[in-house]
Image (cartoon, rainbow, N blue to C red):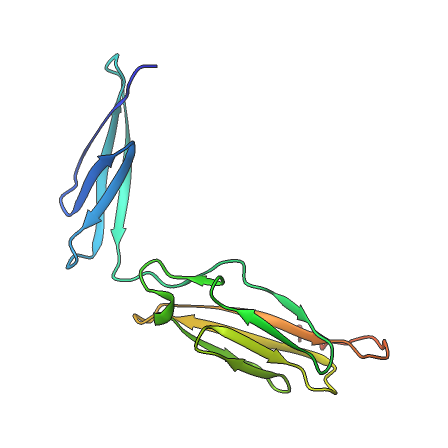
Length: 168
């Protein structure tokens, strides 16, 4: 197979290096902005193809949610533990720097430990549905949130009824 050559131009504020077949990008710590870099690929016959690479440097990326749970069924009087460690990732802040807030609980007991472990407890007489909102923020103010619907059916087998949303 013929080798391809790669070159670029327009990299005034972004440093580019080709390492083991991958482009590695870097910028100085005091610069934020967008730069357009023209990539040129050339084959051994001299044919070329070009493409524009747009690089945007921001001061901080917000946390991202990875497959957060959506529903949790519980029996009355039961408790469950939920680890938040694998739910939010932040590429530029360590997990210990992320702060969590949980809201929306009325009858459910919700406790958050310093190790990002949540204990959700349903009272002994709990039958119904509550929606908990989990919000995570990083030190620069970036944030993400998800809702967890927690429900407990009646021990007698009666159907669990939920309020329908208003339709206008």
